Length: 331
Ligand code: GLV
Ligand code: GLV
Image (cartoon, rainbow, N blue to C red):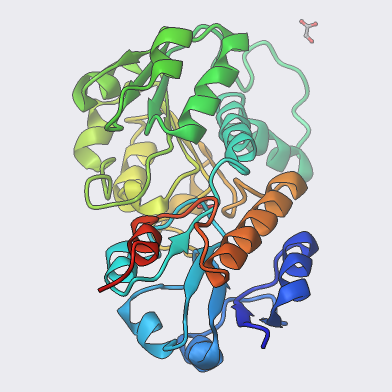
């Protein structure tokens, strides 16, 4: 009997073919998230689900999937999963770290340079038929080399972004994270600062922290007011880490110089007024959108799910204690 598996949205073929070899597979044929009703009816008989950051994996989801033996997230972020609830039910859940680290760190750099050198603003001008040509005082931006880079959330992606700054000779400061980060401190000579000093010191701040109760709205009106008026804020993590209405106000009034955003507080909706600002660059949550990263995510998510179905510990499990507990003999 092949295990029944639901894939809530089409993913790259290398992941699907791993699953198809072993499972009875249903893949959402449409290029959109399933509605909650569609999702709940599809998972009623599923033993494994491979889902997206747009799917809410909570008590209601688990209730709707009584045969479930594991859930694999096609994302490194897992704020869409109620991990304690999964653990209470003895169900393993996984994410896709590492395979998208380079892609996302590169995206943060793309946004930083695009904002600092006004790439999108001037591109739009030329496309609109205005061809201002070269001018000694036209379109001055900011040099990136030698400026202080601030990493908010010194995890895998934040560390990768900091490593890439070496070519630009940037002092690095960072904030957050529970564990010491030896790569940042020893290898890059980076300095850990408290939030206030971090905000006041960094020329460019890039957000890489996970979304949780501690980081939600960390960048509110008060935090934005403590940043340099020349600062640029980059977010390739999760939208709600920034109070987006406060950001629009700060950008409009020139309290910070610019922002490059790949994620949004009310995704896929943009805060009122954001799209009208010339000093922002906006991309639609494409941080991991390279063929290399997306194929890596597909294969890793599939391997995670196959391990769960086989009763083995998945490569990147978020709650491995549920498996050690069961192999130790559940009472
Ligand atoms: C994308 O946002 C991810 O968390 O992988
Ligand atoms: C600019 O194009 C320069 O040559 O200085």
